[in-house]
Image 1 (tube, rainbow, N blue to C red):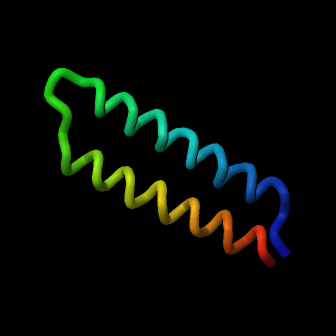
Image 2 (cartoon, one colour):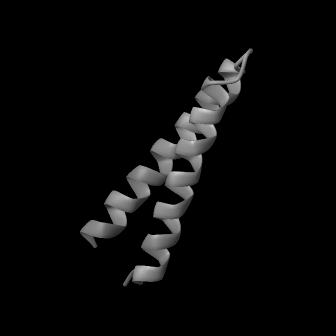
Length: 55
């Protein structure tokens, strides 16, 4: 069983990644490789949150 603390920690990571993506996009010369890496990690965490929420 998944605790609410674990889900909350994943949600915080997801939000932090969203902020990191936004920060990178708004830099004068954004690193597109870094943006794609962050987006992949954000999607992985989103999928994990959805999977754990169904359990």
